[in-house]
Length: 407
Ligand code: PMP
Image 1 (cartoon, helix red, strand yellow):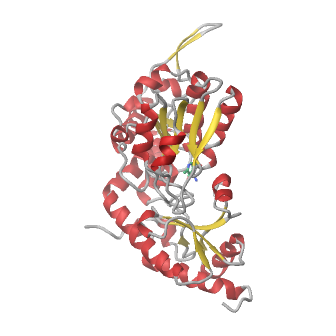
Image 2 (spheres, protein in one colour):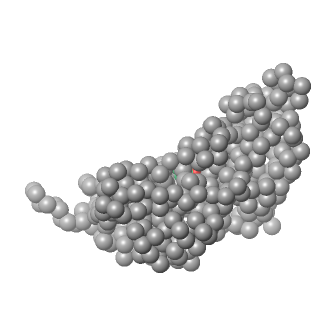
Image 3 (cartoon, helix red, strand yellow):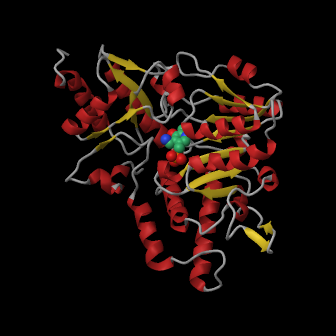
């Protein structure tokens, strides 16, 4: 069985710049097959799809639709038309807020999210809540970063119309109890939206088994290029929703004063789509399928075990969330006593060429809740190695002495 996947990633094998890349939660590196698929599209297939009647345009259309099919299979959607291509998770979540949210939320309704959310899954709901005089409610976490069943049962009420929840926290790496949350949302008649940005790349996801109404994720966090995102929605709900953006490609007929809209999925894909991005996303999915989620999870768990064991030996380190390495799905936030994360990141970059994230990770409410202004964050993908972790630990051990502390 192949395990030397790292060799397929040119940027990780650049001898002139041997980076220890620990920021895959921000964006993953790309394998050669994905890079080549872009080159191939622009070398031999490029044309505007959907409306052209000539062969090149027909090929672009069919490649684009095959990419949609591949995404549908990847998350086990029932039909290809339930997959809408967007730019990223942020756009996917905004699409739901601007269409479903605008149409269905009334004064006095409640929208429930969690304190773990990325700003992309907070700001659209703040907007709807303010515009519609609805209430935005939060489910909070315990000391280990977990949303308890009591939180789910008490925060989601008959007034709740939308529940929108992350699959995995981009700060703590902790997975949320999705099934229990979705079940409760449906019991009270609300829809359930999942932000899968940190889930889809790391664990097998079956939207029919989850029974979520929407599932949003980004190609660039799972080996594909930036600029291609996905929104899955149940067909019956998507069909009822008004369009998001209006213009070419999404219409059936247009008169001077009116228009009728194309069926799914075109209704939600106004303008020229990102065909090369979709094709490269298909190549990324093929690559991930070749690696397999059991290998991905095993590798991330193995690296997390070493990282947490080694960091825990250092008395000046605070780790956020669960002390159990198995709970951190490839992501870990920590702080070094007395040292600002921006300094940590700059120092380990300068001395060890380590790409380490520092800041508030687009999750201000969570950081405030954790009583941390900012954190250092490492995040793994299957191409990371034990050597990456040991090089990182070696640098972390030196950070305090770089700044003149005894240890
Ligand atoms: N949600 C989560 C949990 C994320 O980690 C991110 C990216 N950091 C996003 C949403 C937003 O993704 P994008 O920037 O690709 O829209």
